[in-house]
Length: 520
Image (cartoon, rainbow, N blue to C red; front, top):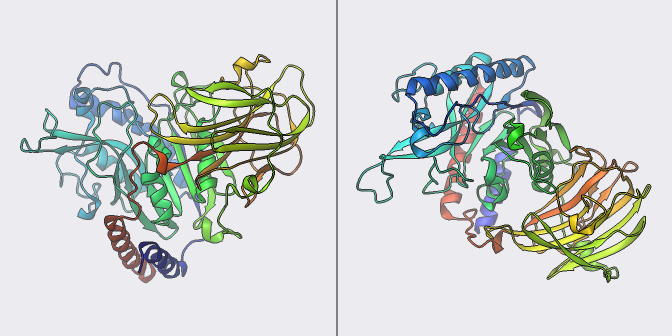
């Protein structure tokens, strides 16, 4: 049996085993937290002072957890860095860390707080889950003692990891994930091996990763494609970057492109452009929050399908390039010009008329747009752009992007720069591209950084089109593609022997767990 057929068989077996008695929907909650930061992060504080700060933040999270439980939420996600912030050195983060054991030890910290040494934070989080009968995901720091015989062992004798933990309704530690793709985090180490972490409930199968991980194949895509999770739990400290990578814009697009629920809890810190949390289903955002005006946190909750891909009426695989490669390209405009989005060199062409059909190409990628504006605003200019290549200064991740966007001013040299307001509405638009990847994420962002739920759809031939009347005022309409196999460091773990073994073991454990639940 091939790896792919084995994984498919496991997925079908899992669905059959879990369908009887499973909950069809559940209420999920996420909390955007305005973190209380330490006064200074360049000076090492005592463990007691570190604990005092973390408990102040947990005091706030506790109110959100209790409120979510009162709304019958079954699970709540809190943000990355929510207990202490982010700007640390290896030395100054150390007092905030605890030794977090493998969940296989079968531990309820609330009942046995001293089993693994000093663990006051794990104990309090466990008790919050237990006392409120709700699954709780929190992001904390893990430390692991290493030997001087280990050549990679850091000078302080510990590996330090950015870590997510999940406690179930009994307060038991059921999941631990060490973040793999760090982003300017010198205080933490990259784990030796990438982890594929899932856990199972009566309301679906869950996977976990953190912030920057979402932009890579592993663990993000592997958890969906090979481990067949229903819902991803995603704590983040996401800094918004217009026009393509605001939190609500990209995360809602990722949920749609991957066909799973995505529960996103972001930090709220407007001076760092950090805001944007949501509960995203494959069909549409359920609820989201974006606030650059206040310093307040925000609790969100919504009912979602436990098995969104099973409940979907149409599970046909998307062919993102079917339409674009089948049609004769529209005439390429003579006024095509170069410009930049961040550090990426796009080819642009202007939407010079109130309606039209345009094509712009860059290397193997051609982007096609049909459009009709409701009214062409004299002081607003839109362009169609194409980019294919390694992204940004690091030039590690391979992007393919087709985008229709508003320029900052009527001067075409400003196209691609961040802009937050628009007035132009479109009676219709249809965007497609000759993508070389199957991983494409459809984005529509409206004026003042709002989403457009229920007003657009992706047709199975790869066209992103509007529906249900004219659009709101548009900032961007984009198809954001990730060609993972062209990344400069690509190495997939999705079909490795270890991944298959992990999936088989976790599935068998899932069956045992489910049988215990049914018997109860």
